[in-house]
Image (cartoon, rainbow, N blue to C red; front, side, top):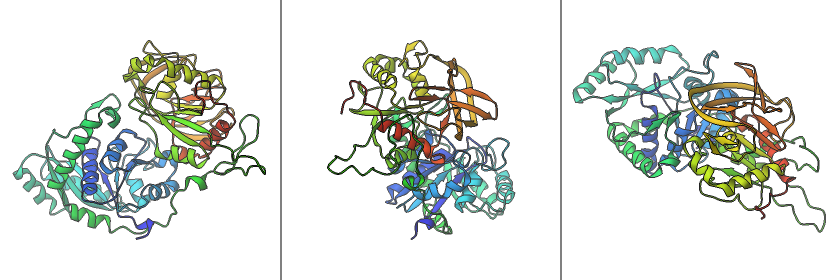
Length: 483
């Protein structure tokens, strides 16, 4: 079987709340427990669901976002992530046809399904309907003839009699019922202000939840029929995304020799080969938001990638020359992050040395003076606090000046997703100038620091990883982080 013909299904729903994550995660776990190598994917920018997908399959959960990365990259990124898999399952986002606001189908589940030439299985919340389910499914099946709605899984079914009525109604729809799941709260996943609680915060309980979901799916779904459907896909003509090939020459940052990204400079005769610059990447329960492709791009650009946990580790990895702090929930761990004074001091020292530091959202808060009154790293002249207001949505932005992450004029698409505010929201040199849907400046650039609320998928702009690694290669490890 060639890479382009990987069996695949898209798990969608008429709306949010129908049970996509429950069903998709259960299917992933059930097929993995049956011995298949399952590749998990998520439509849209969400970081949390892929954590459950990874737990269910043992492979990185990967995002497919046509707004952040562009439609042309969806199939290549899919093929890269699904390499070597027996089956790929793609969980949708919101309702099947809901995309980026005001942009038609862009980034919707339907859009991604068409780009992947994948059949769609619709998860329907049947809790308050019987015969009407057929009308609902008929509408979704006929709305866009390019979307192949090939099956339905009935969720939240109340009883045997309820299931019988639903199946009778669906007999006339022309869309087969591939599963029926009873109402059951035992395998629920707890939520809070930004969605599900990440796996890293409840790993033991999450394992139990995923196992229960797998059992429910095995009992209620026709796994053989679903797998047979997944195997009906045509071959994708695209080549898999290759992080090394994506990295071209990157313009130098600051002064000093520039190592071409993705390559190793040949040493002068008799000289030792240069070491890879070490870039530390924050993780653990407080910093769970990261796209798998970011670490792959850093490694392809010539870096040694070293994960660390700011909740547990009192020191940066030895020899750190650059730092990436992604998103997450630092507001839930502000006291513990603050209590780790040795690490906060090392982060501040690294930033003061001019080493590149890329911080997104939670990382931005961690670099601030304080978060909800708790001292943070003090790298940025700003105070952060939790609010009730949700800031959510896609953004378009441009780099206003050269910095360690982006060359001036670099245009990106990103995503904001937070309930915190930072005062002030931008420094004297902002990280980005937002151009859509509103115009404002945002974030901080100071020395080697680039800090912003904006989440950006580096696969859409690999030069970001290349510049960061190039800058790290010229930096000196901060005191206390010697290799």
